[in-house]
Length: 375
Picture (cartoon, rainbow, N blue to C red):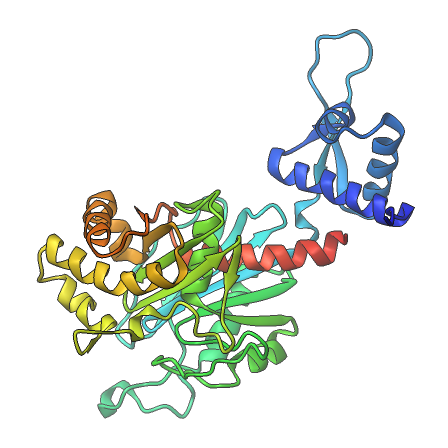
């Protein structure tokens, strides 16, 4: 059996310490020793190594009652790198920039319309702006009667730059409707979205000068649900997305499953009673049917995922799934139990705020921490 080389052991120890500083905030060397089980010399070496690398710094001393000098507190230098997450919808988008701890330090929102915007509460301690997305210079005027298509690349670049406020993001992660090929990272089906272009990730990358990744928005919502919401601590679950559109995402063995071409979890395409599942529970339909009927329709579509995947947990996400809460979840669970002997718990989403945006930031943080921290 191979043993870790000294360099590998150092990298593992460094990452362990950095993850603890993210989770718990400033810590002393004795606290790091207690939490990691590492020896005094090993912790002293890693603190020196991380300080030299510009990843941690001393921020004073711990308040202790014992005799002698107090131990120094060390914190992660969260400003070392930043990531941007974007929730791109048919009506507009929101971009958020976060530091290495995941704390949001700036946001910007744009709406796709020519009539003005609605203000959005400012994130405490963050830069936040809301305005109408820019149309190309040669676009038809509002008086021409033609729909003005926004220059989506320019609008995204401008909003991200403003939210960043001089900070250079390490990576930008965009969540958008539609399938995204897991290998190429390209959209395989153009979303019905103002100003969309197939080369959007690459063109935005060229304009910003940073890496840009595109991901299906429901997949990103599933990442957030797994880390922060109703599926926390669960290795397997299916997310049913009930929002402007209907979709789904699959997590098995703790990993997001995209499928061979990015279509895993697209429950909306299922045919139920001769009608596409997404049409049976579309927003305009949900608004006029009783909760019991909605639960029955959801159960009919979810039955396919439950039968094939046996996930053990179905999460009702999106604005409608979260708003309906546990009462709808209980109704769906009861309907599913009559259709399948496979035990399936049903929960409403518990992610606070914008799940897609949270998932985009979390995905960006995973990539950035791996690259900045190493190991």
